[in-house]
Length: 253
Image (cartoon, rainbow, N blue to C red; front, side, top):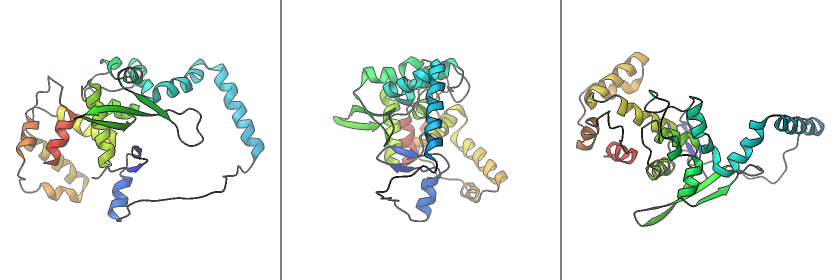
């Protein structure tokens, strides 16, 4: 997977840019770091001054005062409805910016599912969340989901079922690839309808050739397409209710 991420602690990811793919190409499974010494600040006086200036700035800015509280309570997904109001959160493959944001906010997820809090070492904000869901008779602990993952598998696809979004995020964590790139790729497939999948492959092939990518040779001869992928190509754009889990199944077959 070209946009594989580096996964840490089951669901914390160094996403985008394919750093995990680079590790895989070098057959590097993991990086472990161990140390016992404290990291020293070169000039402790400057460090204290910067902390004081930051605290003073927060007291003068209401948004900066409320943001840490919202992140602690709802995680990064506290921004979903605010992002929509600001025109910053995309929907339906970047064609709309108004959608049912309240169905997927951090507040809504906290009301619908058990949500546990955690934080990175030394951080007092503790914006990390673990969402517990039931799927196929089993209890699953899902890291997050973070705002970017909810946005990518929710409004960007036109999907507003919270469990579907959470499971899509979880599958990305398990498979080790970036949620943003994954969501955008699926959103593009939906947006490209009703063009047949063969035509879509040709479009991608032409683009790769223009970019001089060696991957273009994969598309030179016609490829046999699985029935599940062909079924995916016939999805109606008007419905905009493609389940990401179905897309993953099609791409795996």
